[in-house]
Image (cartoon, rainbow, N blue to C red):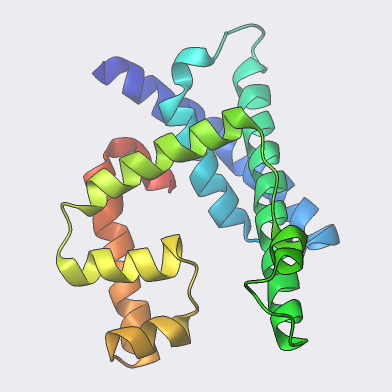
Amino acid sequence: MAGDRAALERLLQHAGPAIHRGISRKIAQRHAGLVDADDVMQVTYLEAFLHIDTFIPGSSGSFSAWLRRIAENNLVDAIRREKPRKRVAQLADSGLDPESTLFRDVTSQTATASRNVTRDEARRAVRAAMKTLPPDYARVLQLFDLDGKSGAEVARQMSRRHGAVRMLLARARELLRERLGTFSRYL
């Protein structure tokens, strides 16, 4: 198992940077400010780790192609998730009742079943690792990364300054990476 993990790590080190650059270019061209390439790659590396058993080796570029496909699918998913958030904010500002059926219809998202399963597996792995963190670390990760709250909202809820929350978040993410294991340096 350790050899498999080391081999995966080498493959990710080799293929990851070029894929990250490609995702960054796509974001810069059409979706600047909507999603972050680092976030897309974080999910991509986690999915590669969780689903390496589904990879079928072929030519010398098959791993890169497999990883690129995962990253591009994650980019599409991230854009789909973020666009409704912007619409929700615009609709809420317009005075439309968030409990109305129209509001829910306009803000609903679609996703494939396989992506839901993958996302659920990744969430389970992260949540299991989060249970091993100090309470403040787990809380800041929950609020910021999982609940999608802004830095100001997290600071307010945790009764801390915004800068202190950013430092706490950085330390929490680093410890979470350690707890998730070797592959997580790519998260």
